[in-house]
Structures are given as structure tokens and as C-alpha cells.
Image (tube, rainbow, N blue to C red; front, side, top):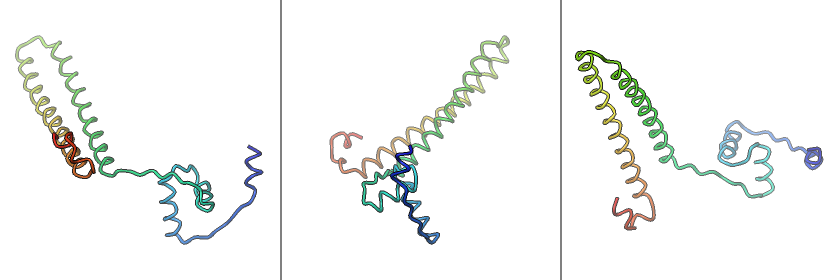
Amino acid sequence: MSNLKDNMSRRIYIRLKEKDFEAIQKRFSKTTCRKLSEYARRVLLDKVITVNHRNQSLDDFMTEMIRLRNELKSIGNNLNQAVKKLHTLEQISEFKAWIIINEKHQQILEKKVDEIKAKINQFQTYGCNNSQQCKSEKCAAL
């Protein structure tokens, strides 16, 4: 550690306008550099900087899928609770009420599954239309 301090004993101070600092900060946030000083050294010394590229449509898709997964988890929990309740029922009227409630939960579940299928199809279509490999047989089958 002391060897590192010896190597970096010189400092450079600069003043920036707020918008310039924000622009630098924005570029820095897209890199793999852990500290702004590391990023600045690499830029000033013309060293290689690794930049992470994000696919916004994929990020949006993943956000939507996470939301749907969480909804499916809660629906699954409700279904498990309903089945446990079914095992404790003793009278026919209680059983009929459970069937009605269960049908409602089943409709909600089917709606969410259809929503997931539609999102996957939308993503496949979007990804296929925006790729160079759209002419392949695999894409044509989709």
C-alpha cells in the first residue's frame, strides 16, 4: 500500500463548471473504473477504458419480467394458502365458496401468464426486427 502512495504522490487540481462535471460524471458512471480519479488518470494518459453498454429495451423487458415474476409469486402463495384451507374444510357450503374463490384466482393467474407470453413475443419480435441476423431460418420460424 505504501508503494502505491509513493508512486502517486503528485496531484492535479482542476475547476469545472457544473455541467462539465456532470458530463464527466455521466461518462465515468458508464465505465468499469471504481473511482473518478482512476477514470481521470486513464483519460489523461490515453489508457484503455472499458465502457459498459446497456440495452435499454432489454432493461425494460427485464424490469417488466421481474414485476410479473413477483406477481406470479404472490398468486402462487395465495393458491398454496387456498389449497391448505381446502384440506381443512368439512362442510359442502365451505367447499363451494372455496371453488368460487379459486376460480377467480385461476383467472388472474391465466391473465398474468398470457401477459408474460405477450411480453416475450413482443421482445422476440423487437429483437428480431432490430438484429442483423433476422434473415436466418431461426428468426423466420419465430
